[in-house]
Image 1: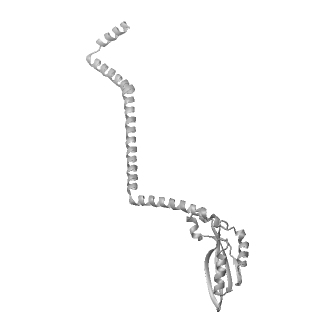
Image 2: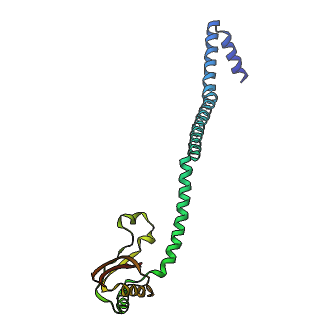
Image 3: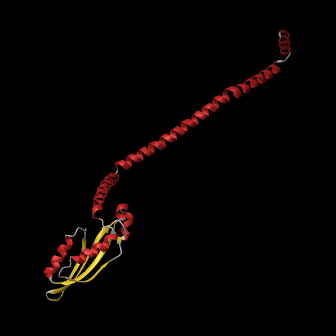
Length: 215
């Protein structure tokens, strides 16, 4: 090893100044190359990664701040506050309506009981002369155009209409209608048409309906 070092030094001494300078520069270039390759470049790569990460965080922070600002603007907007208040009222009204519908169950009449209802109406006629009595097919309780915007419980309520025509005088008509109202059926009156034919006799057309959860 010492012999090799002595040989290298002797060889170096034999070089002129220009060769020594070139040799020094060559060695320096080689050292710089390896130093740059194994030390500087990894550090720069880490710095670039860190810089990119910081930029991503800044971008995300900016986006998040914009979202927070937008949410604050929406929350502080009077229209938003009014909308939330209306929604809360609607929820409350909906729950109340559901309870009311639940309480309506006892007033529903099954369509299969219509013949019995008709028979009891006829039995209450007394001294009035029934001319015609017919039941109409069941139909939704609410108009069709409104069904899509109401609760399913309301969509499933149907009315079955009964049209009754009879002839009688005023006081017998009044007594007959009162007897119908006293029946255990839940009748909902729609219309009454009273036409005097030959006083005191009149032709009376009455329309009423029952409610059901079946069509």
